[in-house]
Image (cartoon, rainbow, N blue to C red; front, side, top):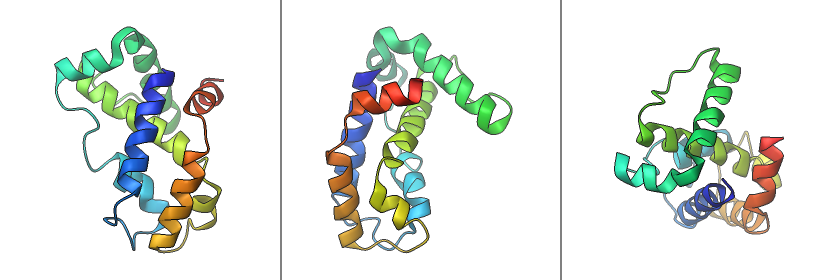
Length: 135
């Protein structure tokens, strides 16, 4: 799962490096980065991406949705849906590690904010975030 977190972290950093989200509110950034586009497209690619971590990923989605929505809404038999929900959950954990984003939560983000958030994220360890989230 550490590799999955690392892939999501890299994807977020790549997206932050463009100017496409300037002007959005800090509180909406997770939605734009992790919910507007698929992280992985196709069942075959999703199965390969999850690999030996498929059941751990399913468990992560199940626990997250039960705790946040009171029920599981993701079709856990669909690898593409599971991996995209896992990237959504991991993205939430990753973005919460940015002190700058937490400070800019209620304001419109500028290019400078994106650079500060990116700088925060480049100093974190995806492995340590995964272990913290799994605890």
